[in-house]
Length: 102
Image: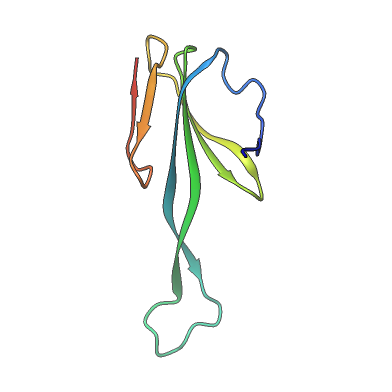
């Protein structure tokens, strides 16, 4: 059985025609206060991942969303370069490439 995890009203100005989902992987550099004096680096690199959702709409926009259980669904970017409604979106497994077709 499926349940609604989160609802975002007025996500687009018109209907959503396509949706894609992937895992966005990024790295974050953290300064370490208590680094080892013998270690050449005082920074630590952490790999982070979050769910990435891409929506395409008849309103001629593509929106890139980040989702996690703590902060729910947040718009990361809005791409508005399309001259017609977006009929289909797709993204690769690490969300580094997004394709939108109108």
